[in-house]
Length: 286
Ligand code: GUN
Image (cartoon, rainbow, N blue to C red; front, side, top):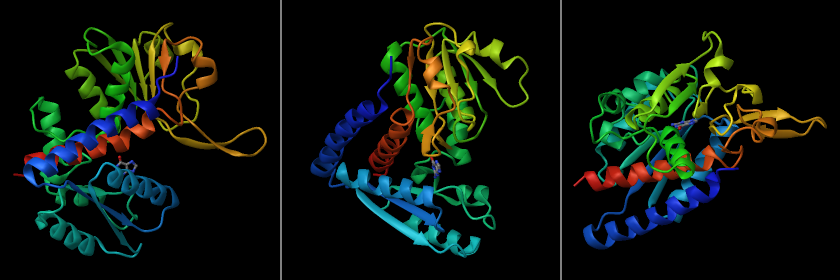
């Protein structure tokens, strides 16, 4: 069966809209998210447009700062310093990837951790690692856990979770969240030996490799829950562009117990969790 990320995200946004309304009424706070986009990467422009639209739809303030591709690292740092000081801004998101002349790690480190709604700052990733409360947790990994629980229920303890990919944005944080849920966690990556054999042990399989239809049906334990984080643009047989995940959906869906489709699975959850993080940041600011 499919796990309907579009529906789960819509339900979450409804709950968030109610929270925003309460925050306004009871504390006079309107949560504000500012998204910074440097350059004109077409995929990033689409992501940012969606973020702005959905932020406004739940009643929050959305600001977008568009900077030219030739913006220097110093100029971007100055912009962030203003946003860090601006009390009406509760969440700051710098859209990645940044142009090559800007060091992403320097930029992420310059975002005030309490406004780092991506959860990428070392303060937040360290808190997640230590299992401390108060961390802003990266959005896509949060979405993965919510979707897994939609199918499996709230108790994931004792399940063997296999993560393919070890990025700071998805692989590592989703592994930590699964560990927090008392799963037995295996992180695999490009140097892993016998990947198929390890995946065959997975009750929960999270694929975040960025390779189209990489995970095959023979790798799947019957009944497993498959969370596909991939968004890959490929051409179909007729040369038409289409989106596929990191999992060979067509063949895997008949073996697994549940799978997130692409599109309509993890993707919509990322923005919903971004709004959730911004509301949490706003609640903590006073
Ligand atoms: N680019 C692609 N995904 C993301 C994300 O989750 N956060 C940011 N800041 N940039 C991205």
